[in-house]
Length: 460
Image (cartoon, rainbow, N blue to C red; front, side, top):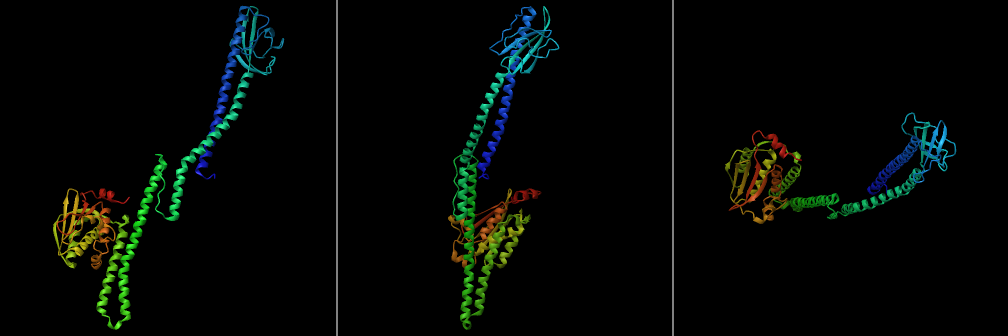
């Protein structure tokens, strides 16, 4: 219980409030006592001034009246003998045993003075020169009202202070609980998601605060995780499906050969097995390439002459392909990137064109402003507008039977798109009067700007 945020916050608030209330109570009591004592001193000083004024005029009565309103008494002493005093003072006894050294007023506390009903007085003393000689005037004011007031304040604070601390503790407990209720709801939902794997979302409280932003961020993260898990499951399923077909074909061929070895056309069988293994090798290679492109840190970037790279791939396609490959306009273009990955982009586009072209493939490279534009076009059936984005998805095939026959697994264009995006470029299917026309755009490398390009393209 004490390990919860709610309990720790409440205990912290109670502790801080207790210290604050204690300090405030002490400060209030001290300040009030000092203020009341200053008032007592002021009353004693005013009374002694009155007695001094009477003594200076020689109008001192034998009995100095005591003031009931301000609880003061007065006494006039000459040569150690009481000349006049208030009735409350014990007869013939000097109120205090101190005498001012000058004509100023001296105020001191006197415990148990010879005054009826008083335990402590503040006594003010002042010298005075009367008609009969030097005298000392005393005036005292009781501090009992001060003590009564302080006692009443202490009693009040003794009950009010703890009550205030408990109130703050209860309010903190309630408020923190209300504040953390959405967080607990988020925790329960996340726990359910972790236990069941369901594609759920956490509740978003309409509070316009940090908790709402936390819930929104959690939902965004859960959506991305769910999407990643879905894509991973689809990827594994598609990969298993793609690999199962050639494996099944090889197994069927071997079973037939084992059952009827005498009638097997072994050269034809080896040719079919080689084709199936080649297809498996292509799929595995594409899967490895796709996994490699998912790790941006694996890219080995450098200055790449894109025109030279393209011409080498064109010559290779001419030597191994079934269709005519022509290179139209090929401008000089330098980019900052991974040479091997960029070669794979061009090779995959040429391989895709080779599988779908009717008779010819055309390659162009143009440099304009700060962009290099690579175009690979074929004269095949083309790609419908509705499928122009679909062809870049993993294992996507518009004509599955034809692609299987030609060895395509639907990974080449997905790999090409990922590599191009890693190089801050774009790839799209552009409009064409005949066949398919793929356009790749990459940022050109400005001379002397290798460091800038490296910073811009470096993975974060």
